Image 1 (cartoon, rainbow, N blue to C red):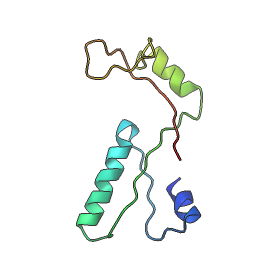
Image 2: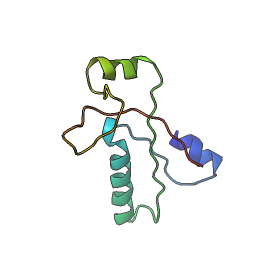
Image 3: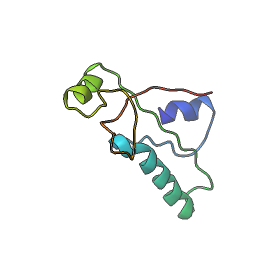
Length: 91
């Protein structure tokens, strides 16, 4: 994905894709910060996306009781009962 974006916008320099499950966006941001602090680059573009490309992934989350049966996101409350997978895009 990162290579396609770099190519489309003609962005030079390294193009890195990270996958660390739920922490991918934080890992990407941390890596960018380390590279900037080490003077390996002057600036970085960081983005994140979550893709459920097969129906097995959300089904596994449901069966293993990781996803919320109520479909409601309630982080940091006693009523929290799992995560709510969603897709979104913005232009």
